[in-house]
Length: 152
Image (tube, rainbow, N blue to C red; front, top):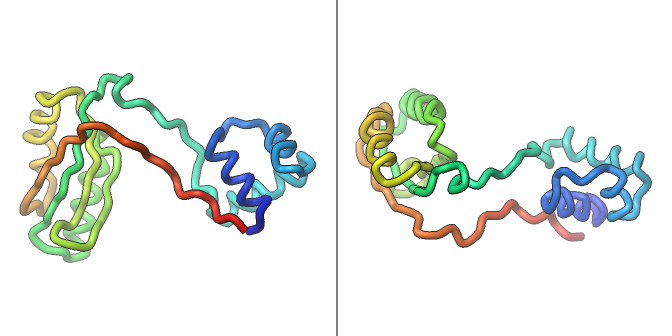
């Protein structure tokens, strides 16, 4: 990776819908050279995906909850069963296996506190091998960002 690759990544993070012609002009390359570099960044896995970041509140999900989950054990089978079940709940936006007192942190979206209560009672509390759950309601998201590309 060189400075041009870093500049391409930075500009794609700012606007993943930028045209190749605009991107090439912004980073000082010909369109064909720019496209080759973007393709190499995709093929090497540096660029994971392109996606739209949706505003949960505007979609009717006003409540964001971070949940710490502790399992009864940590066998590979228990972890796999928990992860597969959590992935089936659409309101679970992210699931992180962590080191420390808890085993997982989930980021969960709900329409309101009552909706979270229903989700907790019907789906989250039914996740396999759960020993303990602790919920923290997000008051305000300060920022979310992707990793900045390295600068050379």
